[in-house]
Length: 323
Length: 309
Image (cartoon, rainbow over all chains, first blue to last red; front, side, top):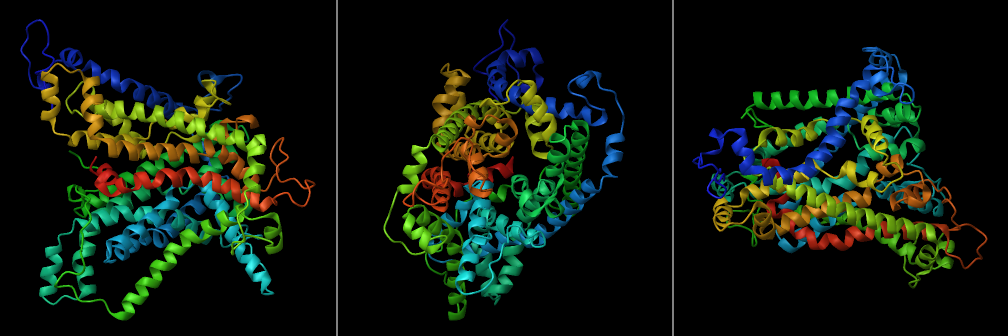
């Protein structure tokens, strides 16, 4: 795709393939591309690189008003040491891990099963209709999803309303901290499972029908075909999404938790991000909060790298490869 | 992940010859399951829309969400739009969504195109800096400090700039641009077209679908964003709709300076619940309007293209 014919370097030098050009010659050739990259570079610099480097405040007794980021005293890993003595932080960690594990078991397979179900629908029109419906909630905001669940399962919601009409007690699922993990997993399924099925459907569509045909001719019934053809065909995608999910695990539905923390209490709903917000930003203890945020970011990064290693070890491509 | 490349759905026009016919029990089970799934999505929307369109008498008699239609009344919507708070929030959300989407699309399309040619100047480090955004998030507090350091608090820019570039969308666009045959661009280059011209006249017209989908992603993101608004917008007159939803609909707190849904407006006034549901509907509607136009592109390997990157 690299063309050197259009913008030959001036001063009569012959155009060479990209790799052999000096950086000056490359720049002379590619300056329009660099210019095009500039707006994105500025945004990424301002809202990714500089904040990423700004994490030095995690190692400081950061005082934004008197000392600033340059003058605040460096205190090494004190903030991190304090974090691990903070019961609220430990609670956030336990909750995050528990919720991640729970969703891995009870959310992750749902889009796969949904894709298998949709794929088995013979009528193309029916399938398109169901797809259109189940993708939709992905485009609703978390505020909206919480509002909708509240209207269905809250103390004044539809379910309570119907129960009371029949002389039962109403229930309030939205403020019950014991069942919070069920509530948020159902919210995640309702919002994201349909959309999550897309990628599996795409993968299913690339499995060659002749494989199924050959298996059927050899006498493999429906379930055997699913086990021996469909699932192996889906395996690379499943592994890939599992890795991405692991890396994203610590981000467990950020707005979802922020929105419902006051309703169910911090015992059940405190996760890393809510901790950073409430114990860092809200209290003004910015260095401390940044330490918690950095810890989360680095653990997430480690999880992705580790999961990718494991995937490579099992002969899968994973998210990225060394090439 | 080349095996995902085409993303075209296998089209069984009926069952294949080798496929055994489904058992009656299996068909009934599948039908029931599909019906339940569709209802789980549509039923809440149905009753919410219905409640927002019901008269005060109906809502008060039912004492909650309305399940059976009894005529259509727009009282709740009239009430909402005659009150300045919600109408202003809708305006704010609309402006941020449109402005943000235009900015994001421009920045991402330019950026993705500039990264679509391996071997060009600075290609590897520039690409790397975008890909890093996938695996590491700098953290809420450093980004907050940056935004307030730039003086963007209480500015609409704080709702746009921090989320202006989504690495995912850039990678989707880039993967698509890279699939366009290089010969087409080469011939344009021979004819003397510059990079901007090639992008505008050749690449973009060939990438309408992917650009539309990425635009939808950005637009939905801006329309739905709640947390950034909560962080950065203290001035209640600048609140977007998401904050109103949280404050009034989810938490049932009164709105600042609003008379909306406050008792003492007479018994004909639409009840709080109808107003709440109308706000929910207003928040859902834009997505529902754009959605069908973009939906058909979803399966065209657009989303899947990202995985290849």
